[in-house]
Length: 160
Image: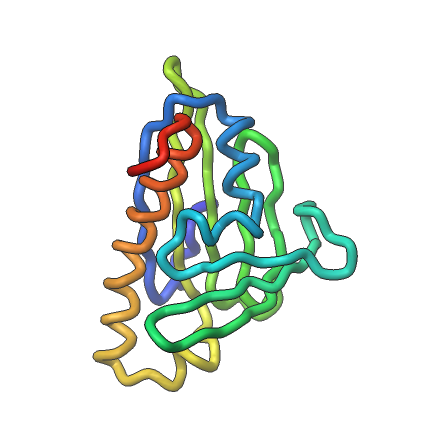
């Protein structure tokens, strides 16, 4: 899913993975495991019996330094082997979006992770312009770290 023109910030990265798209999708849609790969997300759990379908909600747990927080998110695209996208606070709030897009290649999968926000969450609203820019810049490194770790797991390696 491409970010809309009114996105206030946008970051992405892409990695080539020697594994089939269905296997890579199973990793990116496995929220409790996200903590294995992300420098910020430490996991999550489905709410109300959800399992990763469009319209399902989950709580995502995060940590950066000494700060920990939990956010409720809604799955807006769940297309196995192709795309998994969710929105912090839900689609109606239209705040922070995270998208994992998969394309089959001859040797496996091209995985692109995208992040953007349209409306600021309360925590982003509370930031100064400088703090917000630091957050945006930090997100690029987090995406790259996450993709490298997912690649290592999908390819059966323990390091990145």
